Length: 616
Image (cartoon, rainbow, N blue to C red; front, side, top):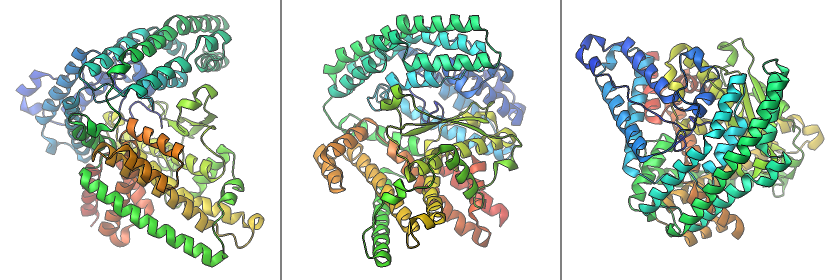
């Protein structure tokens, strides 16, 4: 899923927490009330967005109507001084909050207050780990991510085109900021490995080339043209403006963005010899402490590293035992070994739109309907990832819509890494219904009526990806229903449910294993050879094992965000079953999670206990 506020904000992409500390507030105790809390959180939202044109546009389609006015249509540029000032302003804002009497707030405001205080405190801990974040990782660095965001940058008006072109013009300064950061990383002895730097540099040279721009086939040209054409069709642009904008885009890509990307590649290559030795974060000074912070920030779990490792081990053993039982049951029923080909090759649904419609129909019993919250129709634009971006994109992703254009949703499918059949079905469940799209729209609609706007800026990857994986697992049951309904063409003895269960269990084991290896590498200091042996014993080839190892090494804690979030979601469901007793239902539990909105799991658990107390 792609959103610069949904996951941990990429370094330098958003200037957050400008100083809104107002000393006069501290002079009048009668100001410590709900009105003040609303005032300072509104100031927080404004200061978080008005200096970052790219972030602002993905959060709000029409910010002027929300009272937020962009200060400068440029990408924020990194400097050490600005980074230190940002940390200082976060500390000041937290100090302001500490003077508020949260008992005077209503229930939803108190929950927001607790989330905000905990989040600010966690973010401040990151200042202890300068230069540990890697914005130019070969796995998912800004050398590809920024261009992807440009390609997905929506045009609602002609003014948006003007802002977009200004952003392109600011790319050279942005790149210089990146290189300044990498130079400081190098001086601190924390620069990426030599081979990683070379890979990232090569990506810079491959993702944007003079030849592609000359031929007019680059995705930043083709997507720009299609967005202009849409404005023209709506009467929001003249043909003359369209022609002028096309020329400006071509000029900026050739004279501004391309040279900047070439200089970024050159800079990385010049620094490559300063890279550290191959290994995980555990090999860095304070690397284990940084990793522990990163895991907490990414997953929203308060469990220690040892507790997480034990939890994952137990779950792996449990799933493995269950999978063996599934295989035994299948063999007893059929007298043979499972053949998964019919599940993929013979899956009845292949059209993405039809799949989303099917998922919406099957989820109705256990998930609250969006119609309870809005009379508007949720739109979803499903398209394939541009061929030029396939090598740099996830198998699929969901673009979070702006908060004031919530009904306009986007899902992209990477056909080079997403197969048809049940894989496409469960992928669209993860990205669409009942996954990201459904959760985002539902929680945002609740936020519109019950909570403060600041909640929409909070980033809780464990909740968001945990929910998506939780619903993906449920979709295997839906897939079994689809296959069972098509039983006539597949044979009356076809055990669809068992095969779908087996696929889900295999996926669980794989992701769980990757999480265990992630912890082993970055926290416990396991050697590369140990991890490769574990992967090969799981059935991966040598080439596949090396590819997974490189991903784990360059993208720490990513798999944990999904799977630990999923396990925490399951643990929360078990608590709800215990506390609600006969009053428990999946519908009630899902409504609780969705209405709470993105949160860390410690605060979500506290909220659950309060709900149980209220309802008896």
